[in-house]
Length: 95
Image (cartoon, rainbow, N blue to C red; front, side):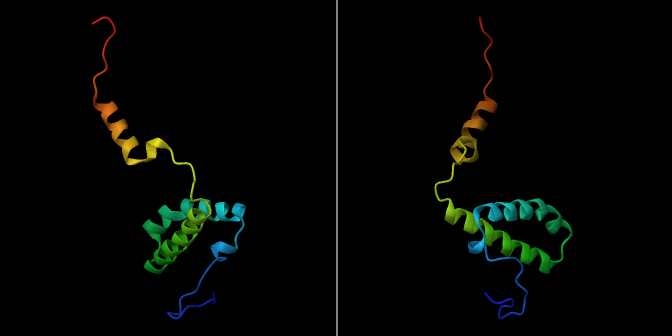
């Protein structure tokens, strides 16, 4: 990809498919760490660039890891089970 696209915005960072696995994880950690500040204090252009880069990096991670482990508690079913467990009244032994 060229340094500039047809809209004249600057592309920052290495194309995600050119990063090795360790570099990709480092980029993902960095972009997630800076997300909150970019949302709260970044310009609209900075937020747009952040969104685009995060989508590129996450997309590449998912492409490389289609069978990544998924924690049961991070699914809808797991959340429902967690919610129902929170609303049940614990029984006291011997009653």
